[in-house]
Image (cartoon, rainbow, N blue to C red; front, side, top):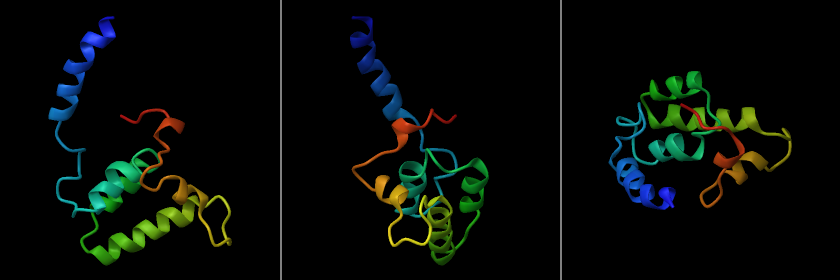
Length: 99
């Protein structure tokens, strides 16, 4: 019962939170990739490196490298992990929350 009463309060707090740290200056599209698509699987070091990139070409190359590094079956045409994390699917329930 208490949980049902706290949900609206928790939701209003969650919606009022600022964007994820470091995503404010990242161009649209890339911020979604960093904040949603790979949020649960990218390391802090990789996140910092991505945030320091200055061109879209560098970002695109970085994204390709991230997926290539995490491909469970390198050398095959499909990257199963990448396909699993596309919009509409989520790996966030497979990993513990990140601070």
